[in-house]
Amino acid sequence: MSVRRAYLLVVVVWIHLGDFVAAWAYQGGALPEVGWARLVRDMTVVLAACLCLATVRIARSLLLPFLIYGLLILLSLAMSAKGGVPLGVLVGSLGTLLIPILFFLVGYYCVRDPADIHALVACLVIIACLSAVFGAWDIDHTEFWTQTMQFPAYMADVKGMVYGGEPDTGLPYNFFIDLDQTRRAAGLLAAPLAQGMVLAVAGVLVVAAAPARLSASRIAIFLLILLGLCAGVWMSGTRGAMLAGTVALIGYLMTNRASRRHPLARLIVAAAVVLVIGLATRDVVDATINQTDGSSPGHWAAFQRNIDGFFHIPVLGYGIGRQGPVAAQASAISVGGGEGAIFSIAYQSGAAAALALLIFYAVCLVRLWRADREHQAHFALATFWLMIGFATTLVTSDHMLSVSGSASLWLLTGGAMRLLSRAQERLDAGAEAVA
Image: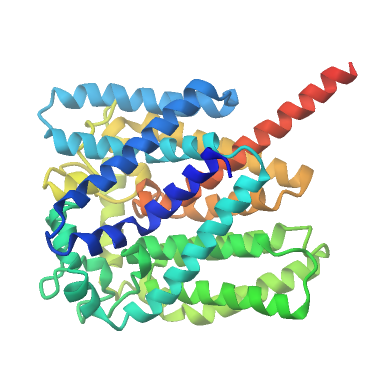
């Protein structure tokens, strides 16, 4: 195993199981040094991203938009440093805005051949399966988090959660669906929202990993894994993951020509999936549409505030740390509605920065789609549809600017882009040799 692949797998495990292991070790303050673990992880990610920029050739269509994105953020940062934003909020918010770039570059740097992607996918699926199983248990054992793990102390002392704790348990509010303390499955990720997204990613990857021809027993195994992951998403209560996963899964089934060449067969399979998912989530959909749950009215109000103020945003935004989860925890939030990754970028760094990231996103989508249409690249198509699915959260939540919630997607995207680039380089070299 190469050093790069080993590092990639270590990072994947660290991202998705880091909080669980760290909270267990912290034990309410018994090992305060555990707080350094996240800093070490983040520094290795920054280092790998810098090595990628310094040593690896990146297609101009990809490089230009995210360099513009990074430049606009740095210009906004310079303005924010003079505006009195606390240093902790400044650094934390900057890191959040750089998450897409950093993890894309890590994937681009570490993936060299298809075996690296296969290892990444296998690692993600294994973690997701274990997390789904654990989530089915932890949803009925809140005392595990409050007493055995002493998770509220870890969240407050190490992760800096000042607001958002449920009064009776101290757990984050997103551990519960409603005020009656109906639990969501947190899984090994120790975060229901991230749990839902990671399981949705893994579910689509399981379908993409299935060979075109399978025996009845292997079909049963793949279906069992997929159903288990879907059940895990449902138990997490994460509507964004339900929507993103549904869009990605149906899109992949409808457009994957290798496994179901006949259009009618693909349509029938996709319709069956829609029916099953629709029946399983009908209560969630009704509550969201009618805004009878605890969070939908808040999401809608935040969206309206973001839209109302969007066209008044300065060219370089209001400054880093003026919106987003880090600012909210520090009571420093003062602009916009406070939710939605694109709005968070725009309000802090300007609409041009948000547009640059969207252009980068679109370039990735085009390259992934072409790769599948020309070469029937299963994981390229799966990544394409996962990006489409995740795009549904851009204006409603900060999932795309969350390490545990979106790092898997950015790593996959970066790895897929690297494989496509290397394949093009080989084609160009072959053409030159023939000439």
